Image (tube, rainbow, N blue to C red; front, side):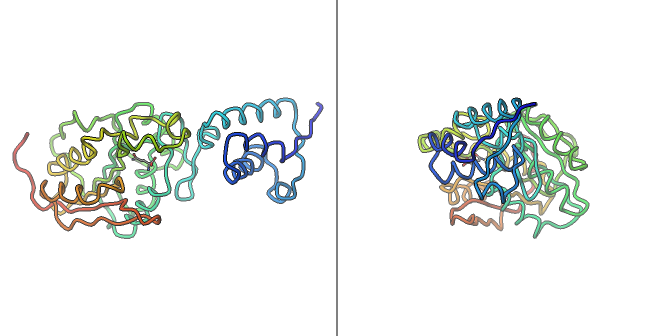
Length: 289
Ligand code: GLN
């Protein structure tokens, strides 16, 4: 079968029509080395790539998708999270480096054998990492989206880990009799509608809105709901861990105190933005709403 030589430069140029130079070069490197299998050395030497007709077609398709601002992770069907390749589709948020930071922090302080619940699991990145890395952890994970749960289950299977996935909507759910956790973790939607304006089309056109946005007038709606559920489902001394909007550290801490939590900590991500919070439940609720 005849092969055609494609130059690295032509791939870069095509991407540079749409992306800033650095980003275009980075995408070109991923396409050449990870998708087309070119060796890194050959890529950096600017060597041509010999492609069959089919591969040529595939490359064309990939470049078209990238030029349409589809994130590379959706194009590849996977994203890296703490050294693991997780399946992602446009039905789930692409795991972010901030969330890796949250999991790293948790694994440094969460004791072994805990019962963990991950609310709004998406690709399952938090739940699966904790199940793999916290000794003896018993991990459950909820998502409102069946599409997301399918992806998360596939990821759990891939890494041979047991997570109890359940389709549940935090705003509708009533805890089961005796349902109890030591830790509830969540990276819920936290981008406000007014912050949308400054977002990149990669995110805006492709990632699930339901995983990202909250109304300006109630940016803490998921956090309040989860904190209240926590008062009924957390064991005494149980802990919440959240990824948060950088503008919401103070109001979040205030809300958590009102809901009966103590030892509230808000800390920053590597970009020096308030990004995470944790709190301990002190008052256990004994009545039902
Ligand atoms: N960090 C994500 C972003 O800025 C938002 C994640 C979320 O809403 N939970 O796109």
